[in-house]
Structures are given as C-alpha cells and as structure tokens.
Amino acid sequence: MSKIRLQKFLSISGVTSRRKSEDLIRNGLIKLNGKIVTQMGQVVNEGSDIVEFDGKVIKPKNNLVYYILNKPKGYTSTCCDLHAKHTILELVPNNPRVFPVGRLDKDSRGLIILTNDGDLANKLTHPRYRHDKEYEVKTSIKNPALNSKADIIQELNQLTKGVMLDGKITQSAKIINTSINIPQKTVDFQIVLTEGRNRQIRRMTDLIGLDVTDLKRIRIGKITLNNIPEGTYRERGLNELI
Image (cartoon, rainbow, N blue to C red; front, top):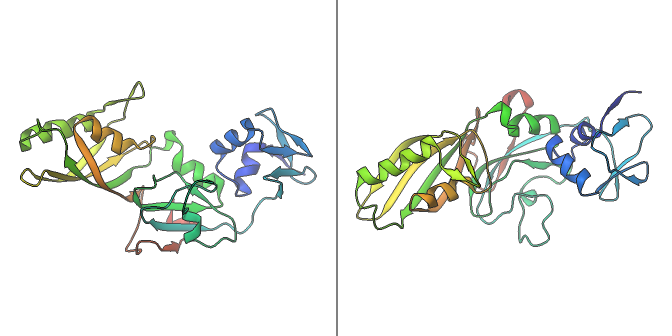
C-alpha cells in the first residue's frame, strides 16, 4: 500500500490543487481517520486511511477531465461562495466534480480551465512554471493629464517594466496591438503576464490613469479559446493542454 503526502492525495482526488490543499488543511477542513488534520506534512496510506472533506470521504480519481470554458461576465470563479449569484460550476457538468485552475474575477470573461487533475492545476498555476497569460483589455482614460498618444504610450511602458502592487514590483509584461483614441478617450491593448495576482490588470491600469471597461483572457500557455462561444465549454485531452 503506497503512502503519499496529504496535499498530493487531495489533488489527485480532484478536491483542489496542491497549493490550495494547504489552505484547506490550515483552515481545519480536512479530516484523516476521523480527526481534523493540524500538521502540513501528514502522510496518507491510500489503501487504509480515510480522508474527509466537507463531510465526504475522498478517494483518488481515475476519470480525469479537462474543460476549457469561455467564462461570461457575472460568474464567480469559485467552487463555493454563499454570496455568489452564479458560479462557473453551473456552466460545466457536475459529475465528476471539478475545480477552476486559477481565477477570473466576476466582471472579467474569457478562458478558464476546470479539471479534477490537481497535478495539472499545480503545473499551470505555480509561479516557477511561468506560463504566459494573455488578455484583451479595453479601457477608458480617467486621468485628464493623459491627453496625447505619447503620454499614454509612456504610461503603458511602465506596465511592461513593472509597477508596485502590495509592496512588490510586478514582473515584466508584454503589451501588443495597442489602439489609442484620444477623442473617445479609449485605450485598447493586449497584455501578456507571467504571474496572476488578485485583480492585477485592473489595479495596474488604475495606477497609470486608465479604467478597465472590458477584460478578456484569451490564452494560458498554448491553451486558447479556439472559437468556443461565450458561456460554453469544450472538453480537451491532457496532451492538448501541456
């Protein structure tokens, strides 16, 4: 009978990624053989130990699934939010149970992956893998001092070099396909990031005097929406994702 770390057990069981499994353990939400787990380095015997989450016994999954969803606005990217009117789980099959890889805030739309493969989730979200994430961004100019294309380009260049968020400089970004309309006070562009802080693009653009009016993720690594209509999903094989 094999023994593995509890975090890995939770990920291959489709509960969540290894990193987020640590949060579940810290919050006392995981039981092992009837007792709440309090130590992060706990080892599980797959053949004999009983692991519980949310009152249910958890078992490793053999039927791994991978959904590419084109998320609409208004849907929360979470598995359990009592205050959310709609969650993205409503848009995919409820069996087997899946979870989102990363997040898009409620007011953003576009590509998000849902799976029950915790190892894949770790590979796509862990900072050391540095997967590109590409977004289409539409903004309005809220700073009246930005009244020329040269001024705006100079500010956008700051985003590529990095700006201060939460006491830490953001990693360098790439901005392409910029469209600036001074009379209409709009600036549209695509941005490629290698990190994913909370509401990062909205906060970055706010710092340079732009207000996001529409934000759509179109790519994660080599994974794209590939003409998936908004509000729908396509199931993919693991070999198409990595």
